[in-house]
Image 1 (cartoon, rainbow, N blue to C red):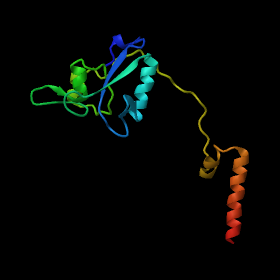
Image 2: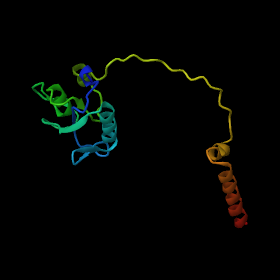
Image 3: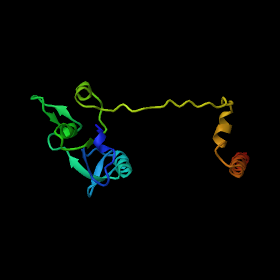
Image 4: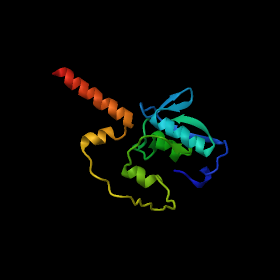
Length: 151
C-alpha cells in the first residue's frame, strides 16, 4: 500500500479512502476523528502532508469483489488509483491479500531486553506499589479506620 513515492510528501495531498465506522472512523468537517482518525492524523503529520478524505466511490465498506470481478469499497478506490491509502479496520481475507500488497518488507533489528527476574510479591503489595509512600500510608490508615468503625 505504501509505495516509495509516499516517503517525502512535503505538504502534498494524501488521498485516503475510508468509510464511517464508529468509534474507529468518523469524519467531521473533513477531519477524521476516532481511533483510526487519530492515527491517520498522526501519520499525516509525520509525513508532512495534507489529508484529503474520500468516502468509497463504489460500494460500501472495506472492499470486496462483485460478480464481475470489480473491486468495490475502500479497497476499490486503491485498486482504481483514486486514493493513496485505505484507512479502515479491515480483516485480511485471502482475496484481499492476493490482490493488494498489504505490507512492505523493511529492514528490522531484533531487540532483546535483558533484566533481572521479577521478584514475587503479595497481591496486596502489587496494588500499593504504584502509589507514593504518603498515599500508601493514607490508604492503609483509611482502611484501618473503616474496619475499626465497623466494630
